[in-house]
Image (cartoon, rainbow, N blue to C red):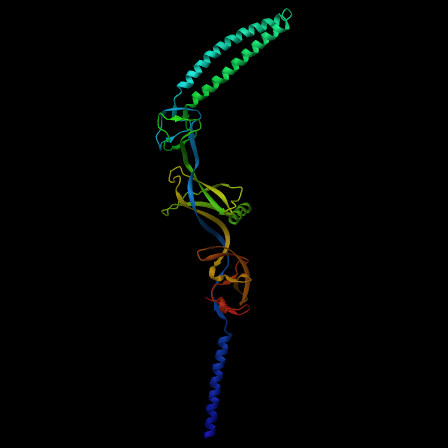
Length: 357
């Protein structure tokens, strides 16, 4: 009786153990459930922000092209001036007196030239009755008179130009700065009296890494991306008008390895000021495939992602691009691929998995 009871207990125990083993085996065989995203290409904006200095597109120094005492100032600092507007007058009295004297000398020289011309014409008609020496003397006198008249005319033209230059006018339209000299000061030729800033358009100069700039140029050439530029002011305000790239330097700065790029902005409302600091946002608009950063696995042999294919884990080798808002541009993943985004460390290539949800 005791032996029979013992046998029944042992059998029951073995059956119970077998049931637990089968349950554990079934649990081990059940595939892991993994979260995925389906890869797709979409248009994205990639923003790079750079510190920048606003400067006027046109800034010209107002300088004197002649010498004289500053007689009168016709403008005040900060005034809007137009091209050709009178700004300063230099004392022209000395030039006018010199011109008057030259005018008198020219009148005398013209009279002498007329007399020499008559003698020359007469000698030409009577050349057979005049000696060679007499003809040479008449011709020489005539040519000297011509030369004297031409010399005086050139001197008068030069004096007249100096007189004209005593009136200093605006070379461009814009806002004039602070004066450098007071009335009565002696102004020399080439001396700077002021400057004019035309800030209806402003420029921002940006030094871009050579690699980035060359990639930008290639995108533009291939038509694979569009670029825009906006300014963000120090108070956080983002200007709505977009800038236009007007020039790219033709040589690399050897000390920085960068190229200078100029971006022009319309400033007709005078919102921006010369010398103002701002943040330049360079916006690259392009079609790209982006995946969550946590989907990308970095390894010594390169970057890759795990994907689900036919219910199993596969490795897809990739290269990466820009990162933004927790996502990264990837190359090498086909459209519509189910990319695993979490738990990759618990997975192995070829392992069966199921997709969450």
